Length: 414
Image (cartoon, rainbow, N blue to C red; front, side, top):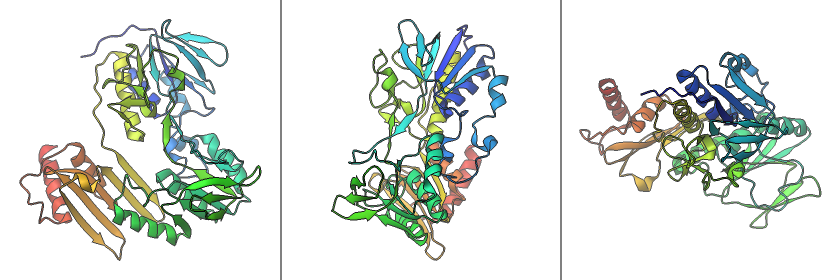
């Protein structure tokens, strides 16, 4: 059921995928309501996930922007770039902007995203230490990297590895320092992680596992690091990527409830009836999404509800895809071996192909594909829909046979 909303102003703070998805949903329901978007960067909203995928590529605006510039005009969106909202007055329903102006809202969407966590490492604020979260971060790195020889990456997650790959292709010596016992432990099992590590080392990138940077050395500029075990490593640039923190500071002196993120219900609504939150800043059922697809869907749900069309958010299956080091990686759902009863594996060691599905209660709950991801979308669909496989003998079935059976189920049901 769609309820016609006569509110004058919808204000959106933030210019990421959650914000753009919300705009699309609002305009689908209501073509006339005023939409104001405040983006604290100079650029039009862009694909943040592309920052490390093409670190040194020439950026083509039409491929990098979430929507072409004219899209905002055609959808009657008042987009304010390089504007920061300094305060929210939840009593009088208005925001205060850094240019001294204020704006009243009828409904407000918090889509301020997250920032990369700054690890408590001595010397982390020295020059030539960078993290990658905004377009301006990439610009600063490009400005400073030309004469650098050794780049040390702190963190072995997707973003850190994509950056390492980019630097390696530029002819730099690259070292990756990861505190855990394997790369991408939330997305890959040990075997998949070992294959990935081998491919990375073939690209002449050094991997240090179970290693932690204790301090960054040098006067004003980085000249190396000291690890917790006392090892000293020379380097002249550092990139760190060790997790994110929701940007909730704006809400700290308001009545809006926050924990790690802004607390929302399944309509993306906060404890204040006319204030919503979506994307990396939102916390739903104890979880902060931290994923592109999650932010997109949350933004859409928030947009519908703000415009008067009731919509409930359903938890999305976490999906990670990476193409780097001349190998493809796909991971979806729960890949915790201790949380499943059966796994089905196929491996071709010569071709460096590894595939594994994780099954619990006759339902596929997770999957890993390394070196060949052609079954990725079919596995994603079957995981999302929690289809029961009770009629199959899962203890004896091969991976290929399982995929064929899944195809039949999908054709029958969907």
